[in-house]
Image 1: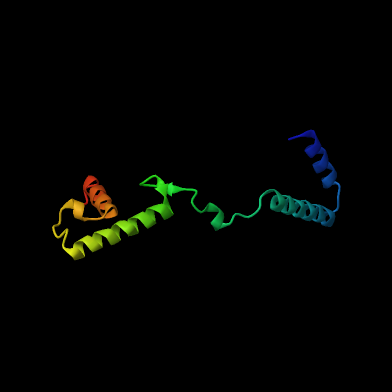
Image 2 (image 1 turned 135 degrees about the vertical axis):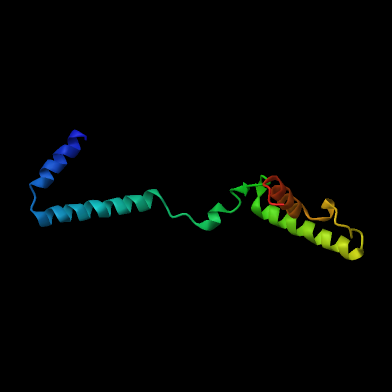
Length: 108
């Protein structure tokens, strides 16, 4: 403990109990104010795009957009009859990844 803090505590012990409580309130209020100034509240929107998708190494919104596009393209090919079989390539990439992961983990 620093000598300054020891001196402050020694002086605080000489105060009446109600004055010590007032000292505690004043110190707590000062900490609240300094914390609010030093650290503004974070907003969720500020975090947008900061983290890559954990499995793909890309931004989550980019991954969602690409996955939707791939799904739409796959659906159109199936509806046109271009891909009617059940080969692994007829599934969109996210589903192929899920199948591969389940096989590796033994969930087949």
